[in-house]
Image 1 (cartoon, rainbow, N blue to C red):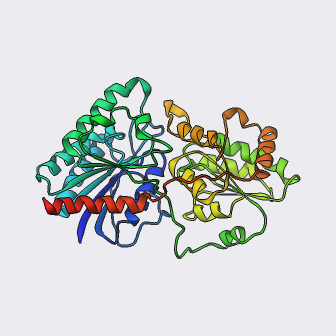
Image 2: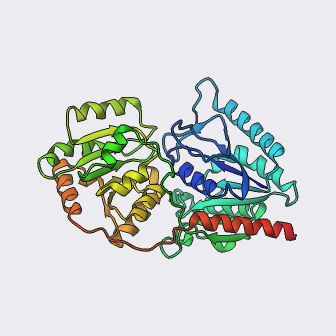
Image 3: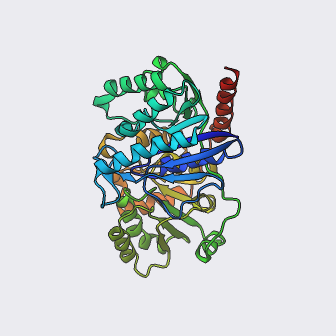
Length: 395
């Protein structure tokens, strides 16, 4: 069986990890897979059976462009970098993959060049024995004043080391040229795969609380903010809005805060909820898609994976993009979907309980709009990688 080594570094949210694992799940029948996770481990996060998972000493950051931090306080960032660099090279030497697939780099994660550049040089020394593939989401994020310098670096890396770029999006909705202007300067294969979407777990193990909510006939309002490092103002507003809704419409509000929400904030929200009967709060569920399928209204940020869940389930949705540090990715996605009438876009000015309650009730009365996107990202990724392997054999 062919071997594939997949590198994923999530530092802020968990969207990169979720998308990467969905891709890996679709490759298990064709490849022996070694998955390298460079971010914080989420204990409840389900990994595909048969995949070897190696967790590097984790690195995180508090914002997209802030300084990197070692998760383990016992080690300095310098020590963690050295350990990770050496470990990656050793893993590659031992595993000897036919394909090395890396999530986002070099379009993002250039701060991890300290470990990725030596690995790419090692791979290049194999003289084509290992093909290198970049796994890229639909929208590229970079600070506007750094675009020219950033794109030049991307071109150098791609043209020196990469055999293929896979864009996990639909060009009819978000062509990569809109956020990366030098596509024509990349000297490798570039393919759109369609969007990578999650599938409901085949054998879910629901808790009693899951079963009660998912089997209830009461309308469900689902609220989620990805990893939980951001979106706290949105959650505060929903919690403060809940008492206003309780007497107006039948419903239950289920909040998932995300696994990385600080404990102090989680406890603050629990205190704010008090004895309210129409709202409950939990950190994380591996069954968010099941909740999305049940929901009458989804309120969330506009990250890639949550947005795909909204689109594939057709649920009514109110979304508020993350806009910190000049990060335009979620805003671009949300604005496009809002213009198509698929979602209602939320701004910080909307986060006033009276106004927010009115918006929620009005949106619940509307029929959700639907549009057809290419959602075959997992299947097309597998097909394109298999084609790359056939080219290798022919050569």
